[in-house]
Length: 343
Image (cartoon, rainbow, N blue to C red; front, side, top):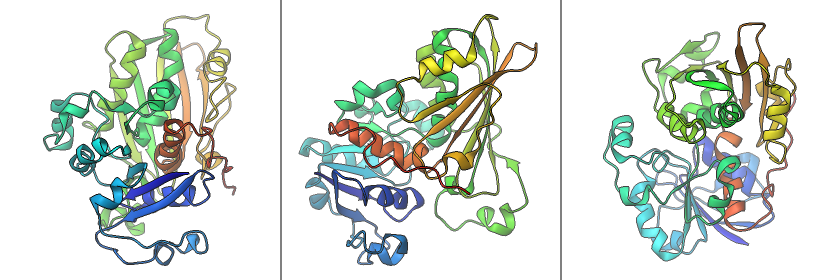
């Protein structure tokens, strides 16, 4: 059994980790920390875990975390980078669900996250935890940077096109929409039901911090610098991301259905649907799955990819557990076989 600790277990991502790990066949939850809720039984805060988890939140304790085989950081940006340098030398492996280790350039990190990086020497070691492109590296990693939710949906949607060299990397558009749980479990006027309900808006139009993360990954496959326009939107639902992606074909002979189905043929958590399909967020709600469809729009030479995920599962906690499974030689799908919830 893998002895697991979770730092920051009271947010939506932490709660999703608890839900998945409580029924994981090879994981033992040992430590769940929360400064504000120390001493509170986990099942008291999250009643859906009653009878499945007999632990209480504890104050962060480096000694207790050091006794774990792996620690998940489900914390705000800037937290993990202060603790990881002490855990790694003690043999603890880490999956960070925040952004502390996603960007390789510490100056770029500081520009987008507004603080100097606390351990820039670890950025080159950290493995970007998108298993579909880094599976072998994740297996041997001490430190995994779990991808962001938007980057997961956008990157997986564009990857087959860029890897095959059939689209212009200088003209990519990602129009992405997310439910409100992507903003975290915190009190905020802008996230009140009366503010979000019956409304729909774009945000961070001038530049979102996930854009450099997407570029960093996709440029490995494009062979050239990307010109990416990325605009996120907030929609009045709880879970889910839908990314509508646009790219210009530079080859007219490409069979999109064959390209996507072949590229993801061996991927257990990516489902390429035939062109003309319209994947929706409810078809992946609660599941560790990215479902997508690619369609050429008339004679325009533009390919449209629709990519959907549950932002809390494949976009966060589910993908983190997928990475844990790889790191410890566990069946990759262990604990992640839940079907989507309908309706």
